[in-house]
Length: 393
Image (cartoon, rainbow, N blue to C red; front, side, top):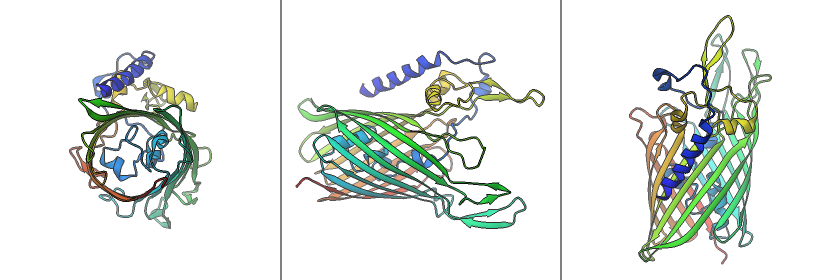
């Protein structure tokens, strides 16, 4: 029921904005309505969940219980974390069905300096493997190992006994050419600054005398400037995102606990319009809306600019659902599912994982199983996380 309410509010928000959609040539034909029209962003590594726990539960985390990797999905959870401080390291071999040397690494640290406030820092590093560059004649012009990284600093605070908020500032660097010249065109590393804004709420309750907990969270992430790699070229959007989620945890006894969670997320990026090509007068928009130049307007317009109207806006919502079982707070089993519409990227996969916690150390592992019905470059992806939590004692 709680998840239904969250989805209902999300749908109403999209419907309100969608009323203003202006389609230039009447209703869009079915063949265009059902054609691929994925959202376009640069630095997509920002949207990857690097930690094993979130990965094993379908890449969710807006409202899961706080941990050292809370900054990846909603840093407001840090305000409720039980430990004084902690550090976590995650590693994932990425796209191994395509190449063998792409890797994702993530390092996070948090420190709770009083009962209401916590600070956090994190670094995500994405190595794209060794690339050989050739000119337009096929001649060797050098080799380079492209990389992308983000550096975060966050602050989380309790506003009441059950409600918290957080702000994260992020620096993003994308160096995909090594600053070289390709076919006479000088390339530069792309740089951007962005911010996350998150809120989180949790409260205890009982179901037939079973101690339980309900939580919900929301986070705007990667709200920042666009990126360009050459002088004078059009800048590209980074993956700004809105995520809404809820969780219910049951504690039937002192040894067992079971959590179920769901997330709904949407990229706050303009949907590409459909153009009509005219060699004499130039291309013009047939369906959809022009791409705005203002960043705030692009985030707002992303709710109502799809050429296919409300139906297409709903396709842009990604859904994550997962379960987590703990025994004696030492052994965990996790499972989840991630769904993206086939016309918006077609990422669909199941995930499973396990976790072990011994004293202050913990180790998590997750494994991705493709469900898209065809060869998926993310199939068989593994994630590993090693962490340390230090209590007040």
